[in-house]
Length: 208
Image (tube, rainbow, N blue to C red):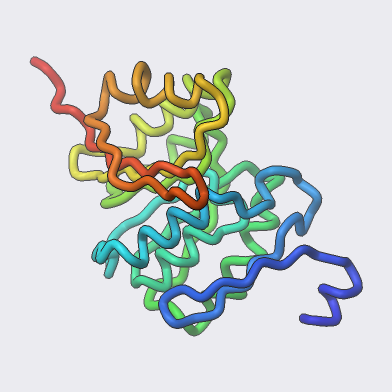
């Protein structure tokens, strides 16, 4: 493994979560932003581990998994994880998740393609206990597709947890003007070091 890293000059980030060393290879297929560990992913992973959240045997879906760090941590905590992203990013996800979870987790993570708002959604049943997303709110033109996806995969029992570093005013607009129409949104953590906010959201009851 070390020889391959030297040969291809792969950027590597190393973490410790749940008593395990987690090694993330970035930009494995030169697919850009999706193959990089961003601050929100680090903050989300720390939150999952340190919050006392019980993920044992819980159904967890991650949107925009990228390098797979958040899904890896959820898996190490005993969750039944489905990690998703676009097809050109999944090569990175598929490289990192098995390498860091094999023989270490109770449930083998599932990795699937999911283009927000597309027909891919037909294969996802809203049975998840938790839906996670780190830094998936950053391009305004994707908001309708993202919201359509969130509405589809979240049932009344689902807790949606999002971590975001606010780079543009439109990031805040998503939470204040888009997501809040359908979800009760609560800020539960502010990571001063990474300048990342974590939100817990629950779907509002449908009006008769």
